[in-house]
Image 1 (cartoon, rainbow, N blue to C red):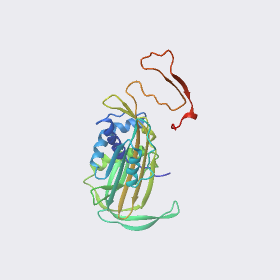
Image 2: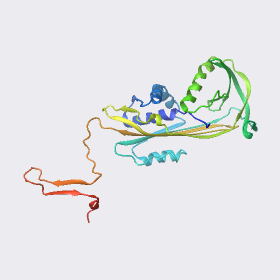
Image 3: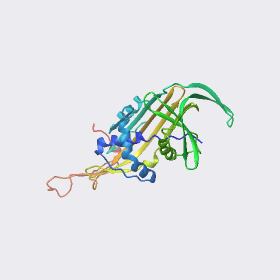
Image 4: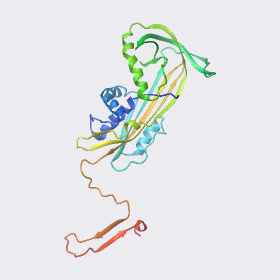
Amino acid sequence: MTSVVSVPHPLAACLLASEDVLGAERVWHGATPLAEAFFAQYPALAQDANALSDVMARMSSFDHEALNTFFAERGFPQIRFEPFDLDCFGVGAVLDLKMAWTKAGEPTTSYDYQRKTPYPAVEGDCWVYIIRVGDVSQRVGAMNTQNGYTVWMTLADRAYETPFEVAQAVQTMLAPLAQAAYSAYDGTIHFPMVDLSYNDPLKWILNASTQTDQGQTAKIVEAQQLTTFAMDHQGAVVKSAAKMGMMLECAGPSFDVNITAPFLLWITKTDGSLSVPVMSAYVDYDAWKAPT
């Protein structure tokens, strides 16, 4: 199995950035059950995203190059937009959270007897919580950081395949941990150093939609999230970039005419006084060139 990561706040920040174009406090509707579950949490996630403004940037633009520069300047040159079609725009968000342990750990080397391989590890001081999740007693280690965050670790009960499964598993532990807040033990934690990268195509959020105040429908037509996480004896760094491409649909019937294939052309007098057009033409690709 491979590692799986859930970082929801950059997604909420993307939706907040879209309000620069769509208007404030949009109500989103998912096209999948996972999207509907996410949008049910969106009001709370949006508040969280605003609270993380010191470590998360966001932007919206009709200029794909401006968004590409936004990502590149923040360490994600691989997150890119292609030129937008008519009535399309993009949004992006980057979380960059650096954390140093309140007390640095000791680097060490451990050995995985099942895989028969050594791995770099850390030994450090932590708070230990013993909680009960269902019928299972679970030991959770917590390491505080100098900038007001806590990194929690516990053994997984099974392998997880999707970010939603990971988020739900963690969620089941939050209430028991809150109840055990005043019964922590002073202990020691031993954990592997971590260096991971997780690319999520976010297929579940595609075709989610909202409406502007003018009645125009906006849909998410492309999305991607790339997350990196590193952890060693000095601290941990999580960086996560998310992008969404959005398309504005017409509120009513479209009155645009886009000539993008061979076409018919004719010329009349505006007052309708001619019996036939001055000229009628079928214009094929051979004539698509600037006049000389």
